[in-house]
Image (cartoon, rainbow, N blue to C red; front, side, top):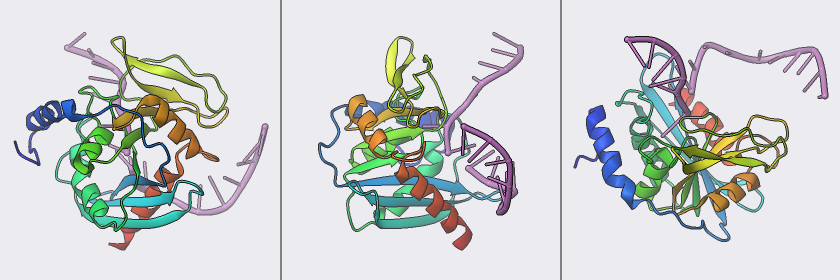
Length: 219
DNA sequence: GCGACAG
DNA sequence: ATCTTGTCGC
């Protein structure tokens, strides 16, 4: 079983082999640190920059950060984009000298055709609790949630609940929350709200997004 | 067959 | 994802 699949067929086979290892359980009770992950892409080349920013879960201030740059070998294919971001993302994570209590990924977790989105993959690779907070819908159906912060509605696929559509700010487009690894939807929802005191997206995602763009220009 | 499709 | 700063409005 290759660690780095080359074709789409191999990639899907790997997802199907790994998905059964995902653990759905309550997230950490009192996480002290929460890390955000993101990847920025260059326009012309395949150069990518990954960033991870660890925040203090209490005051949301940065504790540590790391970046890594590389070349995206795998092409962008909906459902397989973890294979594009994962290698560089793991390089950045490896540079941390602190182990975050939770990882927040920019993309889906179980809300994925194979029930194995980026957040699940990152969770299994690191063994850490992870959730996915995506800006847009990938798969599933939902009713528009209420327009107050904290309002949510289930995201379902074929009758199965795969995530939640969560309003993090009143009157602003909702985000798509799903379990990555060692988390459940209640904990994931609670965490996402704790990370969005001011903006639609989690502070973790915003910090990682900014840093990844800087890293792309720098190196 | 046609359209949709995380980043 | 990326091309793109300041600016209008609640």
